[in-house]
Length: 307
Image (cartoon, rainbow, N blue to C red):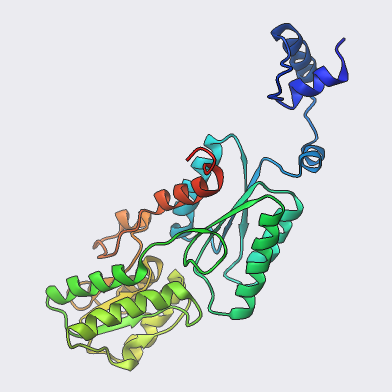
């Protein structure tokens, strides 16, 4: 018993000056509940050229680093009454562009990209083009990582953090270090390695190149890299892994090899992921405010009009 325009204003949450009275509003909403009716989100997105979707793209949601950042993004998205859509890349450099294109086709309102940038120039250029097209369509993009893309970025100082860690370890008496360096093509791993090396060089120290192991940026990568290191032999008294999940893999490998941590070999990491709270012995690491980083990135794309 109401006009199509009245029903539309109620169901679409119109904020126009032509507000619907409470009696008519209740009549429409009660009828919608009785019929089980919901507005067609795809049709609304087409009409508005935008939607209530916010994309979150991470490398690996099972990694506590990414799940912690994702928790902060999720909190902010929910506070804005929007819907979060999660995409994972499995660390494939070109997959970010594919997911972003899909979100663009669904007229997503905003996207947060979380993860280390690849040093592969082609994939970076492809992602840059996709971000620019997304922004031209009216969407907003923010990143948690290195500021190499045309988007607002929450960027932890990996170089300075790793350098400070190295100085603290030297103060504890360590002079010989082994390094789990992660993959060669990830900027985050390189920044942390460079920072650690810079502090060692300033102290007149340099790790043996045979004590630098490259491998996957994962727990299993840390385990395998440590196995290779110990098979080759090392005089290091401290093992630095460029992230905490690799460090936990390293500790597991050392334990399986019958070595005591830290009595026979100390281990340090980077990130301070939540799962470290249950690790014994506790891990020396660089603390990043992971959830806060996620909230800040989401605020860059969702709260910019209010700031």
